[in-house]
Image (cartoon, rainbow, N blue to C red; front, side):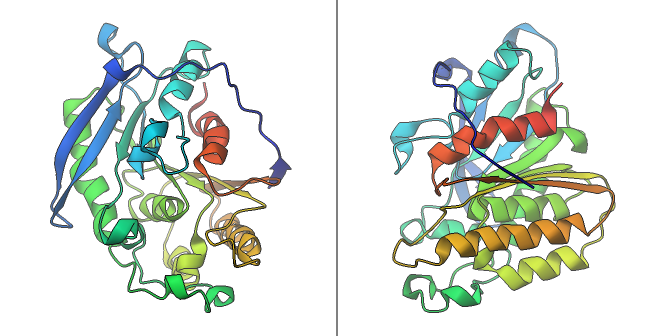
Length: 291
């Protein structure tokens, strides 16, 4: 576990929209709904015959374009991967970004990103906004990615389809579901990028799931957290809830199996925002895919 501040390279140019493909209304049969899926191809995709690793990302509307983000800042994932490929840090990576659910005024993402109903950490029991019937669709959402979306992508694009080249990544609730997908679908996913995970949403169920799930294949988990994370500024203990939750799950994973490698980076004073995740995104890529 490391505590550090990560510099961000402001010189990185914007991503190339000509390499963005939009799959509008992509069918999610496991959830009986449709969704926009964004695909970003490496710079040399059209001029080579190479196959590429794939990162499947949640909250897809926040991955590339700041204009689509409430915070006004995206992950800048496209331009950062372009920069890393141009500098020789990677051989190129495909991003598949799935937009989140627009249902329930945006809270529908909490349904899809947790396999379990909301069972908040005890410190949050008085948070009125979270006393909603949320969560429980994550099992179906994970099945959609592993059993519907990934086969489609592998069939239609030059991917390295093997598990060791396949990652699920996301932040907050997206971090929770990414860890779940990597453990639940080990035959297809070897890696997870778990940014600022909202383990508080279902802290006991996720801990039980980790303890009860056998590690059958090598897994590589990148996890990070800031020391000033919150989802509700009126709850002064929220940063501690985020930080302690990440540390608890990290320790469970560390104790799990010698086939499971897990890191936890703690960024001092970092908040719960796309700007923080953009800053740390290259660290995940380096851990999982660097040459």
